[in-house]
Length: 366
Image (cartoon, rainbow, N blue to C red):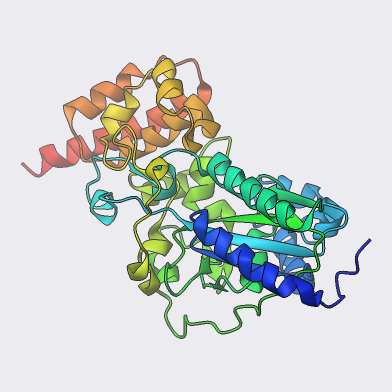
């Protein structure tokens, strides 16, 4: 097995440059190469898990050190090729929708097609091109599909630094990009890590978080994060967070949207990332009216599919509870009261109570 601390083979320096050129040819905005020493990040992860900040995401702990020691996940790995791909779609309404409580806000990475297959296919192509150059070699591609420290590896590969919201920030893109990795046994030359941090005294992300989930710089309590509550949490959303969720029904981008570096984010040229079914601007009522078959049809190939129909209704019910009162909203919620899922009914009842309170307040105000 190759020694991960061994220096790069001199003849592989030109190959590393070609790999970066091939990455650009495949549509990646940036590609970097790093070693597999994640000792500091492993200690940070252990502290985070010990604090219970992962909530119900047991997968963050169950793989042990495979997450922080790449060679345990893929034997022979001594280098990681890390890539990033911008995802902000063109002509997408973003902050405007957050200010329109009758509309549903879906995290902008999820308004189009799922990114996993697209990126894995391109990483596989990159591996084939490398193989054509050097012959058979060991590799494995990952795109948020296994216990991989994506952000930590990307930082070491020079793709960005950790912002105060724990996201990877890049000076040319903010954090609006996907990450992918190619584990390999090739002793490629490594790129310098992104050592400097440019956040300074800015704390816009911490201030903007609707639920105060960023408990300290670069530490997020997932149990309070709206992305966790709407995507990862399988049960009832704690009532103390429901009002703060507003109209966010799948994920939350607030800490990214306020970041000063987001203004440098470039629009993605990927057709797959264009919004589908008006998911960047649809009304809460329109989405709440989807039947289960329609949900399955319209979320085919979408990241939204993974939460299932019941949790989709759960999230939308909370959004409708936070929406301005209207007869249409009340009627839609009442129509869902007989739904067979206890989870859905509980959130619908909460939303109806909120709507009735708003109606009484309107009556009282004359």
